[in-house]
Image 1 (cartoon, rainbow, N blue to C red):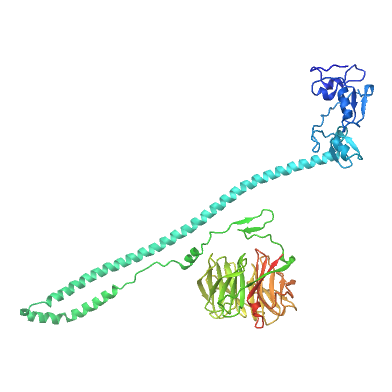
Image 2: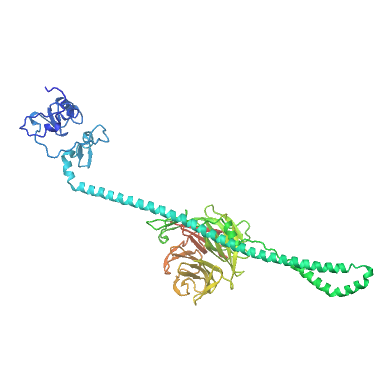
Amino acid sequence: MEVSGRKPERSFKDTVGRSSAEDVEVFCQPCSSDGDWLVAKGYCENCNEYLCATCLKVHRKQAMSKNHKVLEGEDMPKARMSSMTLNACSELCAKHTNEIMKFYCSTHDVVGCGDCMVLDHKSCKVDRIQDISMNYLNGAEHQELQQKVDQFLQNIEQVKRQIQTNDKSIQQTYIKAVNDVKSFKKEILDYLDKAEADMLAELNKRKRSDEKLISDLKEHEKTMRSNVQELHEKLQLPLNHANELFVAAKEMKERITRIGDGLKQLQQDCQFKQCAFVCSKHIKEMVASQFKLGELLVKRAVTGQIMVNKTFVDKKDITKMELLFDCEIGIKASDDTEDCSINACAPISYNRIILADRSNKCLKIVDIENRNIVEKYKLQSGPSGLAVITKNRIAVILPDEQKIQFLTLLECDKITESNAIKLKGKCWQIACQENKIMVLYRDHVVILNMDGQEIKAIYNPKMKFLHDIAPDSKSLYISNGRYEAGNVFRFDFEGNLIATYKDKDLSNVRGLCVTRDGTILVCNWEDCGSIHMISQECKKIKDILKYNVHVNRPWCVSFCDETNRLFLCETSSTLDPKLKNVINIFQFK
């Protein structure tokens, strides 16, 4: 029997790499890994290992290896090994943590240890990993996997470069934004400094003028005092100078008249006006509104979608969405004397909408989320139309006063009046586009600048009994209320008719609005009315809200592009008051 001992000068590979003709000893592989060189008595084909007598005995008793095929004595292989020596697999099994992954089940395409194969793959075709690994390395699957991993590495490298580019771009973007904010602030401060300097220069000019006037008055007063004092002294002559006094008195009559006139003028000159500074009403309103310098626009590099603050929504095509009823909000205030008659409505933010109530002569701001009126602003007469010019500024048509009234919206949901523009006659609706105001009369449209100066008047034979107006960037959409039932016209800003929409089911056109993507929504004002959705080319897309239980006589409509909400108000002399006094809200989903 071979005696156990240490033979450091020999390695296991020196014992198996020779031909059977050579007189060599083959040693136990498990023991030799520990430095014990015991002669091998058997060879396990399943494990591809040479075993000494002790290891062989244990190998036959273990559950995982008792059925392995073992060759002993002369049957043990002694042939020269392949020129390429494979390292033994050292990966441990996830289930049987003390076992090494040595086997592959081609049926289930999984690898495992001996226990895995015995327990879960008895009926499967199982191969030893060392027998098939060389073929796998040269196979198509390995090459395909290698290509995928290489592609992943390229993608990761691209992502790394993109991250570096984005990092640099972000730094540059925010540096530019900070500089823009500071530049704009400087522009405002420079403007204020110049305005202050101009105002102070005017004050100094007036001060010098008034100081000169005071100086002249002082000289005049001194002269007048001297003349009067002289007269006074002559009138004080004693009795023994009566003759001299008589002559002096007669001679001073004309002089007294001149002195009296001069003194009266002097008294008038002393009543000069004092100047006082009155701040600009517009600037004061802006300061009171606590306006921000601007907005931060965030642009997605891939989709090109825009977010302003927190009002961002992923925009979808509303023509392919379903319109569902969301809620109704009561809009009759406790001090209203009449049922509501909403002639116009417009969203002013994602959760606020403003209404023009003609019968109660007021504007109302409605909180959509809390479903209540947060502000009611009384007017001298009933409003007919309104337009949102900016976030904090609106324009209201007052037909009975024949004017446009501008108002400022403060952040505390309060409204203050600003300037007004006088109009040439009664008009009914108003729209705003790119610092231009479009005013709708019954038979024509007038385009004004923000100061009220007329830019252009548009007339066309089709313009009769006009009811509502809504612009996009290139054209005007105008509804014809009564003359030819069911008409919507599209004009360019020169007054040329571009397209006409007419539908037999559109019996009486009322309110209309244009969404940001160019879709037109038109009220069909009839019993159990509906909303016609039409394209920019005035082609019908579809009817919405037809025979909806919440829609009866739709009069005005508006749309919030940030939330995809549609707002609808109704009016009619025969309408149930409950329906007049609510605004219906629908959601595109």
